[in-house]
Image (cartoon, rainbow, N blue to C red; front, top):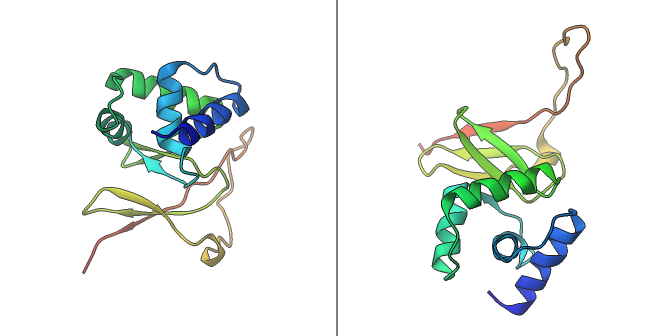
Length: 138
């Protein structure tokens, strides 16, 4: 990781109000260091971390991604109720889930129209609407 990527990661953590530990900075640099949005699983981030030469346990990656999510730095998208992806793009937008590769990508938000949502139970409010469009190749 370059000094610029590490600096971007440190600033991102600071913006989220998180203490910049060595491991958090390394993971943040991998997520946002190049300025591009990412969709990662804990496992894919763990692999990227290992490939970069950083020594971080998979449990630390899971815990750190949860901390990033709670701080509002990433949003968690759950697919199939068991696989979580963490997205560095924080605006509301839909996703494509590619079944063959288990990849999550952004879908064009300007092409999505939700005409109506069902009535919600009394005493509840909508926290968020996630749109995940599952795809497979023909």
